[in-house]
Length: 419
Image (cartoon, rainbow, N blue to C red):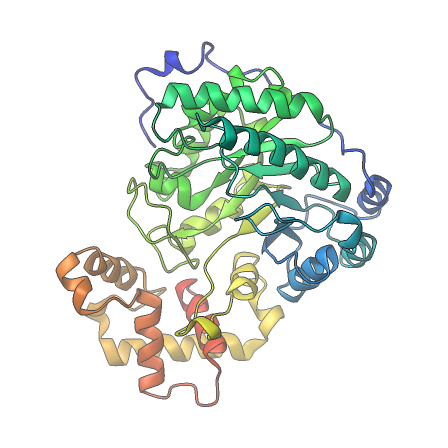
């Protein structure tokens, strides 16, 4: 766990924040469709709600649902436009009825919207702050149109000011935004602490929540890479981290979980995502989080990087990650996938030797490779990350003739999972 800040009385006044009331689905184009959808999907908490970020381009919600279904997802997350700019298509052109119908057909009853990165409610610059408030209000309207309940938001960065200024400024912006929109909750995301971004500690998020007048509409999105990079020990003591979260913020505010491995050791404050099992957190720790009681019934969203030797050939590992975390790999891919992973593991033992730590799920190898990469001199000699190094070995020895780059990488994900 990350030790509690000694000066947290400057952040919030009570030992625990007030509990939020249960929010209702927002008014909008598809509220009735959502209500009908929910009433027809039985046992909402019996199926793991797991998916990934998917594209909202082309045909909007329809395209997003199609992509999510192709990965075997039971939920998904979208941006309603490019996260780096303010250009947006009208929601009436985003194939919402068609998307909802497809989701209903496949039993997807809850999704998440993420606010754009360019929103910075902590900014001291008037123009930047006004853009953040007005654009966030617009994004809330778009989220409500979809009938979606929770909009994930990066709290902001205080830039030239200080943490206390930034917290007050965020609360000021949230008050203005939430006073004008009654039908969507904002889920503040836990942050890694890169630069001057706010939300690295639970105390910082609690301070924002307490200083916001409409805090019954505030929720929290927990990102595994971010909290790991912020210094919380989710690998060895996730229960302790959960207890600290509950004591400082309250577990009833935890609404969304982002699942990512990390390219950096705990406390690095870097925020560099890695495919599941190929980073410092590891598959086992992430599996425990996904199946922990605090995750039950909540959308679990992968934001892991696309993998490939060249930009044009990069592909997501979402399908394999979802199947492995859901204990569904055999059904999804058939017995040949497990056989290939076993073949891969035996090959790596033969080529690298047991002393290289490639047995089991390759955990020792992965951590040793990252340790080398964090040494500047050694990194300059070979910048390849652990997964790419193993991929190159497979290609060099032609272990899987005729397999595509994506197929080989998905088997590497299976290897990292210890399949």
